[in-house]
Amino acid sequence: MRRSFFLLFFLFTAALSYAENKVVYVIHLQQDIDAPAVRIINKGLQEARQRNSDYVLLHLNTYGGELSAADSIRTALLYCDIPVLAFIDNEAASAGALIALACDSIYIRGGGSIGAATVVNQTGEALPDKYQSFMRSMMRSTAEMHGKRKILQGRDTVEVWRRDPLIAEAMVDPHVIVLGLIDSTKVLTFTADEACAFGYSEGKAESINEVLSLAGITPVEIKEYTPSWLDRIILFLMNPLLQGLLLMCIIGGIYFELQSPGIGFPLAVAITATLLYFAPLYLEGLADYWELLLFVAGLVLVVLEIFVIPGFGVAGISGILLCIAGLALAMIDNDLFSTPEGWDLSPLAKPLFIVSVGVFGGIAGGIYLSKKIYHTKMFGRIALKTDLSGTTGYVGVPAGLEALVGQMGRACTSLRPSGKIEVDGEIYDAIAEHGMIEKNTVVVITHYETGQLYCAVKD
Image (tube, rainbow, N blue to C red; front, side, top):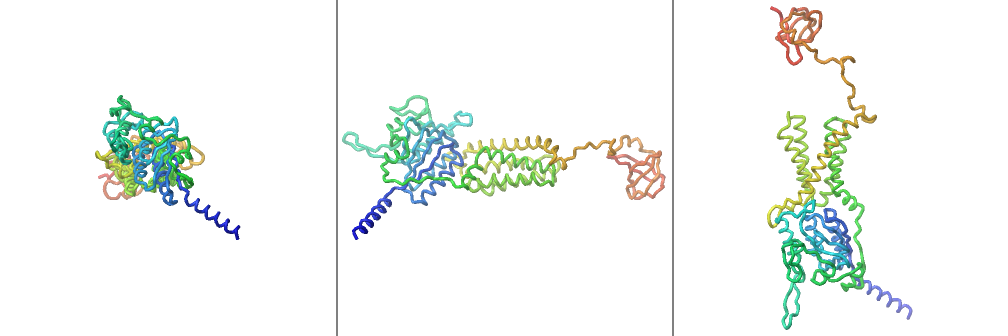
């Protein structure tokens, strides 16, 4: 009886202890900030809610990336209904600083840093002030979202920002001066100790367990976000390098099919590459159906220009522009054109670069490979490699036929209206100028036009 009582007491105590464990869901973000990073955060936060997690810990180490992707992550973290802790495991630079600032608490590894959030282009040069102004406002508003705290100054209680918005601005703009901190013309970057001293970090930690200990989260049960095989495939397909290769396959496949209609294999490659290009972007909400329709409409216009409308005019140029627009717009969020200062076209720069490289690479590669591949054993049967020379029996339009105009001849066959005539013992193809001409009728050659003799009955 006593043994049963102690066993029940032990099980009850263990169950109660387990129930009191705080569930911390860890999301690792140690890469450039781009579309795959946005997917990792969104999926991680979704799973954290599904598992009824008490906290989310963002294990962060990044040198920055795309502003549009960073803004999407920032918004998701700010409005997350679960407290989010950031563990900066070395660096949170540029877009990474914005993401860290969106978390409720920040902990930094010794030797780490946070800051340097100036908006730059692909070569590292600072963009015009329009972009810096937008980034300053995002950094400032993100800092303000964490509110104020009350401190005692002498006998008075005053409110101060938990994270000073002016300091957040100084991480973007080298002209912002923060008294007692920075008065130079350099962009602000905090070390781990400086971040703790100025309220931008709750402490220094060397591991996730130390972060949780400093935050007072005990006892704890740690769970981690692990991408599924489908997530890994989608993340792989969203890689910018692979997207460029898929673009080359799309353009190259279409070029090959137009060069040798009816083969089917190049068209199948182009269709497969198109599906692999658009599918992950559509699933992530970046691409919409109208962007796919833009691409299809562009292809239709290009085909019409080649096979229906002579020349290279409005239809062909419009088709190319629609194809490029559809492919580029599919890479970015559809709501990124609305900013506090109007349309922000900077997110289009990278997609347009990738698409342009892919299109021109596909065309150049198609031209080069078309000269090589059709001389291989496998594909050599579908290419004409023999010269149609006269020595092997191939005869084109004879030269000097215009000299026969005005000469007399005889119809070797009936001309209804075409047939054959004999002139000075030579047989020629001819067309009756008017009506039909019976065999053995004497004719006169009236004129010569586009490789063809015309004749009429001699009066």
